[in-house]
Image (tube, rainbow, N blue to C red; front, side, top):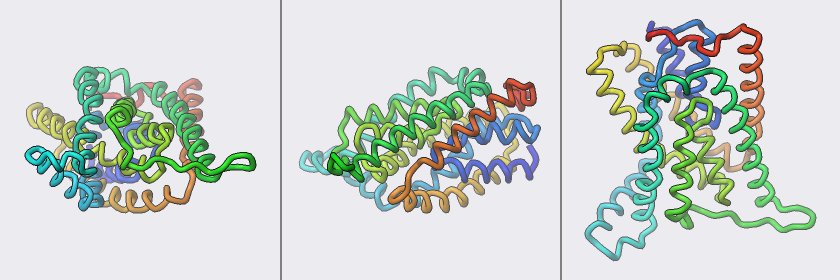
Length: 291
């Protein structure tokens, strides 16, 4: 991998990780359209450490409270009813599905799941799901001629059942094109949570999964020696800087705006990709060389 490739891929990772459009799909497509080797699941996992570092810094106060309250609740029973302590347990519970499926489906994630036809299909299908969830949220927020606006749930109302459902939604993002934030935010909106609550828990829930995945990939890469360390670290730094800017913008955006621009983008991109593959312009395995 060249330094130019790592710069572009790091930029793409940072721009797309927190938006509901799938960073893994965009890394895959960038390589395919540019005629580069597929950066691979290992590169994706390692550069995601950069974007998750941005999440940790952006939500540092929330994370600090959650960790502190969770540890205190282990020894102080009175703390177990504290919301932040409960959030610590809910993040752990919500991380179980992706942990189990990530290990179980490791070979598929690094192989068949990277087929561009599957990526295109998931872009379209999850785009439609996000669109439906967004419309339902808007209907509750705005009401209508014959119905009153309905108050949506906040994270204070999050329980184990909803935490597990969030976790299953997150696990779907193991398939490029689904989008971690898109799947979990859609799940949250469909369960009746506010846009801000759905996004906030989505980003907090991603931290253990991404850090664990990136750590395992770092270990495997160190043992195999198949990773270009300089360019990969450079891409991770770029992803961190750009990701921080994007997450700050996105959290402000969702408080007043609809997700429909992302829905339209996903569907148009997915359809275009299917057409290009069907016409033979792009191979469904484009970019999948040994790298």
